[in-house]
Length: 250
Ligand code: NAD
Image (cartoon, rainbow, N blue to C red; front, side):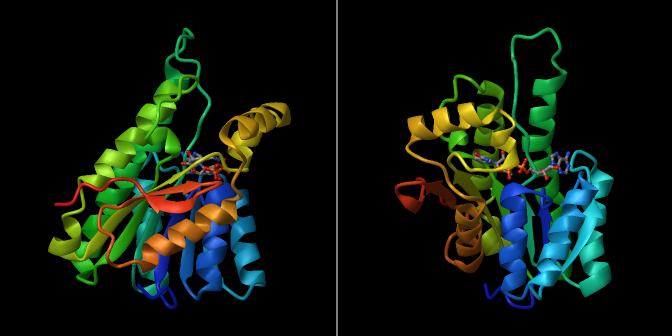
């Protein structure tokens, strides 16, 4: 897919991987709705895109609310009359599974998995209606392919995203809608910095380094552009760069 002139919605676009991806999409001539629950973050991203000569609109969106997700996609049609690319990327981490309050771990499933399913569902319906096809990229994680003893619910949410995405590979042939997932390893964003700089350095040492958000954005761009990869799950690693996990083809 040629990115120039396309219309995209990026959830979690107000920070980290989402922001880096918005900026790269805008730099390549896409028009982008920056959807984030953090409206100030979304606005900052849109301003950065504008300063770089790109076109982006900030929109407050809580991905756990179907009406917010649908609203962000409707906004793409209102402003630019199309929806070609949806990056379901908003996510959170940080859990204590055995604490009394189940709220925090349930919120991880709601944002990281249920909202990705909902975002994909709404995007497919819109793209089917338009008949133009499209690309949907879901953010999973290396933690969706490997066990994470300190974050089992996060790992479960991301494994869910991986297999959900693989299961929709058939849409490429049926509707010209490609659904892919990206599995970054440890990436230097506010999400991991919240655990503290010492912890970040410790984990980076364990996994052999830390990615920059731009490394992940480059993987997303490659997935969008690569028309041949239906249902593909891309891994982004520090040493090995980018490759694909085993695919389940329709
Ligand atoms: P980040 O905290 O920098 O960005 C996440 C963004 O999602 C924030 O702007 C936040 O406001 C937004 N968000 C959170 N809840 C939301 C909601 N309910 N509705 C809408 N937006 C919401 O983190 P990041 O590292 O850039 O994370 C992006 C994605 O990458 C996540 O899905 C995360 O799980 C995944 N990921 C991160 C790493 C890593 O090491 N940083 C590794 C693999 C995967």
